[in-house]
Image (cartoon, rainbow over all chains, first blue to last red; front, side, top):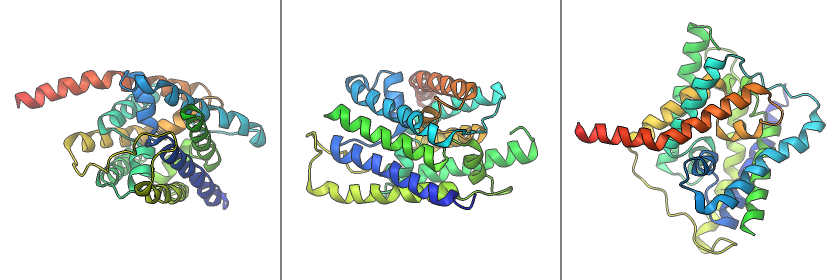
Length: 141
Length: 143
C-alpha cells in the first residue's frame, strides 16, 4: 500500500505522456469525455478513426497488462441504481461541462486554463460532498 | 499516421490508468473521502500527468502538429453557467461510482458487469445531452 503513490506517479506520467503525444502529434486535446462523446452524439464524426484508435488503445493496454497483475479488484458497487445514476450523471455532466478529469483536469490545468481549473474545483467539491453524504450520512456507498 | 499516434496516445493513457490504480473505485472514492480513510494516490496521478502535459504545452507555440494542421486555440477565459452545472453533475456521478470517462473505458475488459452497466449509462447520458441542452437553453431564454 505504501507504494501506491509511486505507482500513481508512474501512471500519471504515462497518462500525461499520452496527452503530450495526442497534442504534439495530432494537435488535439486528450479529453476522454470529448473523444467518446463526439462519437456518441455524432459531433466528432469526421474524426471517428482517430477517436476510435485512441479508444482501442485505452481498452487494449489494460488487457495486455492484466496478466502481469493476475487479479485486479476494482471494488465497483453492485448496486444497479447507483451505477446507472452515476453513469448518467457522468455522461451528461462531462458533455455539458465539455470536459472531464483528463480534458479539464490534466490538459486544462497544465496550460493554466481558467475553465479547466474552475471545472476541476467544482467536480472535486461535488465528488467530495457526494461521498460525504452518501457514504457517511446515508451509508449507501 | 494520425490514427497510429492516436492509438499510441490511447495506449499510454490506458496503461497509465491501469498501473496508477485509477480504475479502482475505492482509490478514487478514497481521495474524495476527506471525512473517512483519505487516500492521496489521485493527487500523485494528477501531478504526474500534468508534468509531461505542461512540457508539451510549452513546446506548442514554436511548432506545428506532426500530422500538420493547427494546435488548439488558446483557452477560452469564459466561465459560464454550463461549465459549473456540468462539472457539478459530473463530480456527483464520479463520487457515487468512483469512475470517470477514461477509467470507465480502461476497466471494461476486467472490471466485470458493474463497469458495463456504468459505461452504458454514461453513453446514454452523453447521447441525451444535446437534447437536454437544447431544452435548458429554451427555458433559460424564456426566463
